[in-house]
Image (cartoon, rainbow, N blue to C red):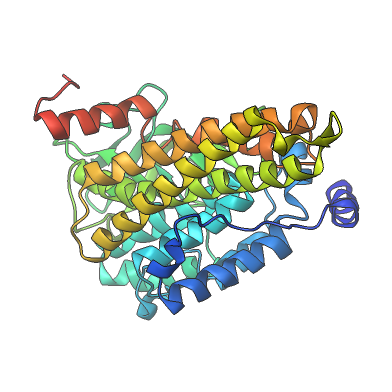
Length: 405
């Protein structure tokens, strides 16, 4: 009841979403009519469904579950999955634009979509049996089923090969034991795509269903970041996993890493959406806020901030567009995706901090989205590979020398 009242209050008092996407180098000319149509439909949905309520949900640290159906309807769940399995059958630039528009609204909502499409639907499509695809993908695409992805463990984050979660073959089934943490969607997920070591030490992917005895998903509380996203743990205590729930198409770390490449690609576009929202907010405010008898946008130091923001956004737009072309042609390397993820998130964090300064004290309030974006991005810079890990991936790629060992 309290949340409902807060929603109504926020919808009445919320400022109209006046967002206008920056396009300094006319990158739109590189997009097809289909790309623009997809982007427009998602942008309209975000303005109508996300913007009026997101501040109140972030303040109360709740995930707005009512958005799930809409995310399914706009094709945010598994945009590149073929239509025969319920996906939208779109290309990778469309996928990127969808993530960019959703994260312009909120990183937590984009995280929900990314996990569902890139980390749950993608591995089922890429590594699963035909029976698994038919059983799960259409319901995941519509949002009837929600999923989560279990790789990170309490003692193994950047080094997933050390995972201790394991499965043992018991003849007619596998017995799963272990735990995963920092799992988006875990508290309400119907299924979990989990990575565990078998008795030979090979990493295997499997589908765990809510209701299986010994499987629990305690929620993570007291977050300062991604407050409108549900985060939790996955705990497995002697969980019986039917053998038909194990992916037949992959063994080893290449399975989860393939999923992470898919998710990192979406983040590279998504984080730029957050940057663009912060820039647009700061630019508009600089023209309206008057000090010393003129708009603050007329002062040199404010113009310096805005000029640097739009420059970095433009560079990021061109980077992800080119990456999208390479991805469509199946030429994009994991290292190229890694570079784009790191660059976009760093760019967004810097822009959020500079935009907050332009807004002064108003920048820390819920009347504007900047502080929420800034706090969210502190998670985005860490998950799907930390900033430092992505630097090492690029370093190894250009030198041929492995700094991880």
